[in-house]
Every structure is written in C-alpha cells, then in structure tokens.
Image 1 (tube, helix red, strand yellow):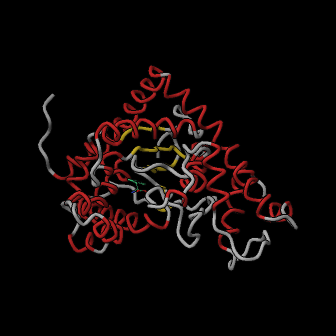
Image 2 (cartoon, helix red, strand yellow):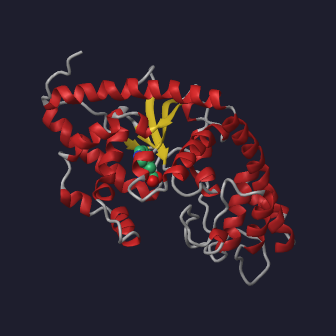
Length: 334
Ligand code: TRP
C-alpha cells in the first residue's frame, strides 16, 4: 500500500517501435488506473540490453518511449514513470533474487526458449535471468497488481514463486503480486496475418501500424490489410482479417463492434478500410503533436524524469534496505 492505495506496476521495453496494438491493448488502459491505484510505469531499459542495442539509437528510443507515455495520456505527476536503469535497486535486488531462483525454473520459461531460438548468436546470461530482473522490478515496489498479457503470465508466476520462497525464509518481506485483469484492452492482430498478434518485432512492417506512422502510411497499411473472399463487414471467427479491422475501428472510435458493423452494413472494403485508417489517424495525430511538443520542451521532460526518478528510488530503496537486513548484509556506513 502507498498512500492508502494498492500498488500497480507495469513497463515496456524501449526496443522496436510501439504499435497500435501496444497502445490499444495496454497503454490506453493505463491512463485511468491511477484513480484507483498507485501506479509505476517503467521504461525497462535494463531488460533491453539482453538484445544488442546501438547506443545512440537506444538512448533516443528510451527518451521517446518515456515521452510517449505522457503523450498517450499518462499523467507524470499522478503516476511514477521512470527509467529502470536510473534506479540501481533493480539491478541489486535482481542479483539477490537470482540466488533464490533455480536454473530449472528459468529453463522452463517459454520466452527464453523463443528468444534464444531467434537470437542464437547471442544467448547471453541476461536473457536467461531476464525473469529474475522482472521479479525485482515488481517486488521492489511491493506491487499488488501487474497488468500482464498472455506472453508475460509465466514471468508473473515465477515472480510469485520467488517472492513466496523468499518470504518463507525471511518472513513477510514482499507483497505477493497478482495479475491485473481489469477492463480488457483491444486484442489487435497483424494486418497481414490475423492469426498472429500485432507485434513491434514483426519482420513484415505492413503487418503492424506503428504509433509513429504518418497518416499516409496508416492508410496504405489499412488498404493492404488482408480480408477474406466475401465482401461482408461482419465480426466472425471465420473472418479474422475483417474482425481485426473492426476491433481496431471500434477501439479507436469508442463505438461498439455491433454499432460499427451496422455502420458498414451493405458497404464494401473500399469504404471500410479508409474509414479504419481515419479512425486510427484521429487517435495518432494528436498523440504525435503532443509527443513532439514534449520532446521539444527539454527542461520540462528533464524535470519530470528527475522527480519521478526520486520517487521511484524512495520506494525501491525502502524495500531494498529491508531485504539487505533480512539477508544479513552488514550496514552501509554513512
Ligand atoms: N517483460 C516485459 C515485456 O517485455 C517488460 C517488463 C519488464 C515488465 N519488467 C516488467 C512488465 C515488470 C511488467 C512488470 O513486456
């Protein structure tokens, strides 16, 4: 509990370009969570270096992502948005928790297996211990809730296991976090292969609409989106392409799926696809403007980063001090 509120923690990595799937499925739903929870949203840059990054590009991406959190509507005064690498307690607790995590547990992580297969030239130890660092992220803030997608559920499970193991040895140190399954975000699939989730690391850039795509690009991608042989605009399992576009349209306009179906009843893809693009652009354009404005205002953004960093440190260090004591490290003189 912080300020009588339960704690909610999440974060994104500054790798790849965020897609409208990340926005409609996650980011957008984070905006109002602070009304009920004390929210921490990290830019998970320590995790990002498990894959090789080009430094200048990486630095820019991380700053862009933090500014994007704000541009998307997360209030940086009411929420704590910060860089993971600015709070050294993450790495320290990560080390400690690594000593309470078994090789066997980590070997079972499906994301490790997937990433190792994809980056077979760089299967580093960080990739293997990735879930331990993630556990540290979550446990440092005494988190009650973590909004997680399917792909991160296993990581939340291992976080709970590590926390319980630690608590059973040392007493009540960590809050045991739970998944947050509030209002469901939109599930956005690839425009080119609607059986796959829209992904920021898709090799085919036409499959994803990136948050930074301009209006023409969005229109082109929507026009190229795969549909089906008939021309009906209807939400149905056997029409995954059209259903996906309807889902996007509905999430961007706030209209229900039924309303959206009705609106395009009797109309063809020639009308539908540009309308989807327009709906997406009406969300992206104000976001782009705001993003640009924030990035230009260097002193504002630096101020936000500094303040939030101090706030994150305060809470993280509180937990870390407790852990140090429990484990039996000697006091740091000051
Ligand atoms: N692994 C998460 C992802 O790739 C990012 C992440 C790192 C995270 N630490 C976290 C998410 C803690 C939630 C909580 O999506």
